[in-house]
Image (cartoon, rainbow, N blue to C red; front, side, top):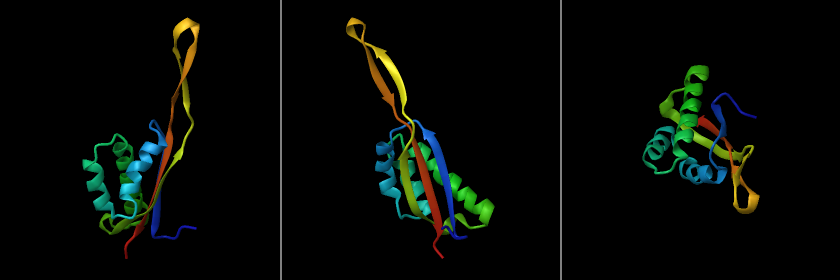
Length: 115
């Protein structure tokens, strides 16, 4: 499926909702690696941190495993899948317990060369 000029990185069990991560991923989809890093650095969302880490990991995989240059990398595919939901309970009135759902997500980034 993937040829030698593509490389990927997956960050799993990130403690943020997948919809909040997709809001940021839509902004960097199709951009170059350096341009995406610049965008992530100045965006005000909490999801930028884990995405930045996954993007750096994918670029390091390209550089160390395949020998590609980071300057020639472009984002081919990015997506966030829903992970398992942590369920917590909060005490409420009259002895009831309300469920608090703490979602997680898996971030996948696939980079390719622009050559």
